[in-house]
Picture: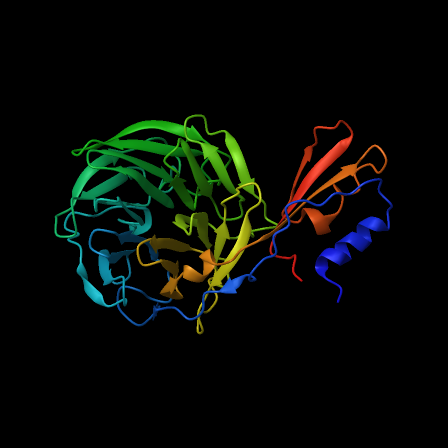
Length: 389
């Protein structure tokens, strides 16, 4: 039987390189998985707060204190719907008294919840427009799901677009908020002290790079994403790009991000393309990211506008995917943690065979290329699921 490894070797041998050494090969135990039918799903059009047109439902967030999933919506009227995360059943609504304004009437757009259950909601403000000359960025705060909303920020950081991406980090009276939007080349950073959210600074990023998500890693770095952009890792102080997941691994049509850990592995969840399919990426070795799972359900239709949002329940291994105008669903992501990988390390004398392996897509689909310690010798690593017996 000819294995994929053998096929690669035949291709290498045909160019007669001088030396080739394998090390550290571990066969993979399974291929990329489909997470299967969701634990529950709600199709757009089934209720007043989630309709199948208008792109008016754009934000979801998981509350780890109550085990609820909160959905920010402008369908019917401005509301934040509370769902039981276990089965998707309706629990109630947040008090939205006093939440108003927003460009095009988007008084609320995105929602984020801290690990201790504090809730923040942001409106949508378009870039400077003559037809909305007085519109400002507003951030609302809820101490918990029973509280009334409180305006903790109302102002204009600058005349860029805000409200397409919104996230938080921290707990108690030390919470950092990140806000950005489409076309913007900046992330606005706010500091919440328990009473108010003060504008702190801007982080410069490539245009559109953070219009989907900003995920603080807790170590001075963040993963950011924007539709039609690569997923990037940045330094939160300087904005310097530290790493990126190439479009050959994850298509750039995805915009949203959420991070989680399982089986001592690190993952990102993202989505969606127009096909309403969500993607789980293993980033344990962030230099060799691997797509390990897809999440979609029967009946999911096209999301032509590509607006979505994602969240996770890390205790019960649930991945929540919102495909605007299409569906909201909860998937069990446990199978993603069971996918292992194959790793092959090789060395080639590039003085004899210049760039032979560097130019081979077969080897470097998910690999890294770096100079070896022996002068002309080069060393590379293939890391992925495509190697199988």
